Amino acid sequence: DTGVSQDPRHKITKRGQNVTFRCDPISEHNRLYWYRQTLGQGPEFLTYFQNEAQLEKSRLLSDRFSAERPKGSFSTLEIQRTEQGDSAMYLCASRREGHTGGEQYFGPGTRLTVT
Amino acid sequence: ILNVEQSPQSLHVQEGDSTNFTCSFPSSNFYALHWYRWETAKSPEALFVMTLNGDEKKKGRISATLNTKEGYSYLYIKGSQPEDSATYLCAFSPGNKLVFGAGTILRVKS
Image (tube, rainbow over all chains, first blue to last red; front, side, top):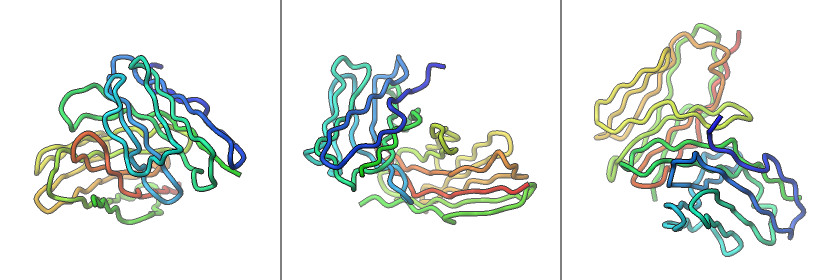
């Protein structure tokens, strides 16, 4: 299967710890997106990359959050000094650059629980 | 602020029933409307991407319509099956990102 993969699938951490998640997009996709979903809500946009360039960041992405895509392939999302409000499902998606209505392919997500 | 609304929030139907959901979205700056199905512990799966006013798309027992002028889309499931149980998300695309509604949770009882 050559879909979008995310690691880990689940992460439990204590408040104040740092966590890092990884996303491997579909190989020929040059656009990579991060979304966050909290209980009862739909996924919310966090940031996206075209190749290695981070082109847009949401106001939701506080200073404690940083995302990278160093070689234009996989991406990491790091949360520093986690807070209980960071508990959520973190979804990664990728697509090939083209018309803006293009379908995004999602990974299974990383569920973060901050205790 | 871009707001995407979905109704109903949840739906319980019997196997064989037909059902439909509504998604309303801003009618300005429209590029595309996406429908996804998200089953527990799996990746959200794209059902349809619609771009033109009046678009109608169909995949098996599932179909969708789009009205960009009034800002709504309907998703229809004919003859629901237990395997249709999932959260159905619609997402409005004003450009490069997706703006999602909160989803409709469908449970189909056999």
